[in-house]
Image (cartoon, rainbow, N blue to C red; front, side):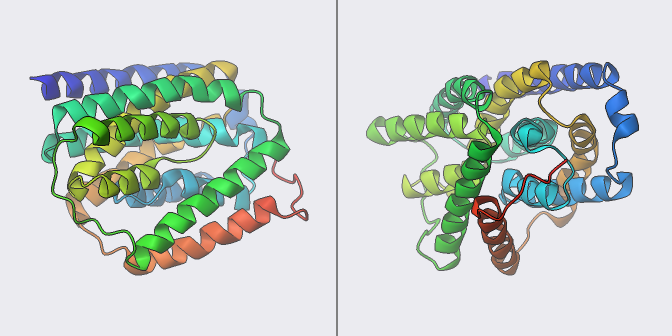
Length: 290
């Protein structure tokens, strides 16, 4: 019963969020008219980003790499954009994983609430960051994700747990971590890799990490993204395209491909993440994103 209610709430959040996003975009039509972003490539890359995101490869990190490399947005709009453009695809992922993977209700609810609280605090920090600090935060965030990916690739992080529910100290640790990840979400650091590693280390079944990861992120990003939209600090065209074409990537991953050996892909992604991090943190990096 609790799961059904949660699924309904998530679906309602998705519909409301899309309405709110479209309404704001229609009120700012000039951004579409003036945008130099190629429609075809934006659609294709939205599909690709959220295809891989469905398998747990950070869409925050992928989006950061792509948007900064292609100079598709202003740096001050990056954090808001990668939060907002992930919202609808992540909701679909949450609905899919919650409907198909078993996880303890108590663990799920505690993690969601913890990340919601963090997600509310995060934007307050993001709104006062200047571009230099944003570059450093995103650059360090990519390094953190890269380290996690590398440890997984080298076999130091083993997904061998079998628990469906966390209790006691383990649940408290999970709640504290998810709260922190909620804050990080809204300052531009994705929580997928961090959440997966946390759940693995706490002994949770690796499959159960996915519904927790998607559902908790859905609620925390929802809370933060509404505030980013209200402030207007995001790229509306990217957000709309990702909210529509990104769903295609999720559907292909979940219902057509279903499983994917990401071992070699992760090595390539790791290299790209580190290269982008170096670029952002390098003194030679210029604010040429426009």
